[in-house]
Length: 256
Image 1 (tube, rainbow, N blue to C red):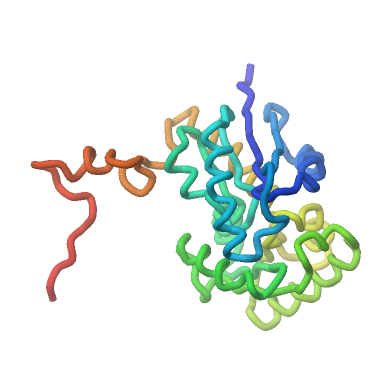
Image 2: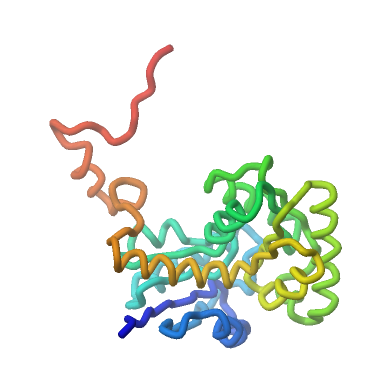
């Protein structure tokens, strides 16, 4: 009998407005053996378009992950807010929509375009993509000038705006895949995909399926994020690689 998977989705904002809509939407995509819980923060900003707002919620995201008993946690923001910090303190798998969507897009085409809420988001999102190894030669970012909480207000209008932006990206940037660069753009990829005739990635779905796949892989192989260095807890990296008689895990710079 298949083992169940438990996944905690954390909306890293101080409003529960999208908790139930996201849970209901993802019901259609979760595996039958997956139990999905969606929560938000007790307090905080309503969106994370400001760098200061994003920084302010990281401690609460870490706390949610630390207390979770689920097989995996998903930090439900395309910026992967607090993702790497949470991996440092968690023995469970921690997944981000940004990381999941970028790697999926890289397998679906050579170039992809990310449709974002506001142009202010672009430098931060480009930095996140760069961390994952994807630069402007492969990924471009396009603002649609819709507030995060406006995406679901008039879905038909949102889809029209997203379609126009996607068509421009395909014509001008030669994008072969479109990424909907906000988890609150959920529920629109199928309409866009039918019209655009290219893959359109819903980042919420991408994160869910990545979490399920990572849980299954971990159970079969034991593979999870390494704690040797980047995600090591304080002092453990020294014990693992930099104590007397051991080689420092960081390569030294050589003089030319």
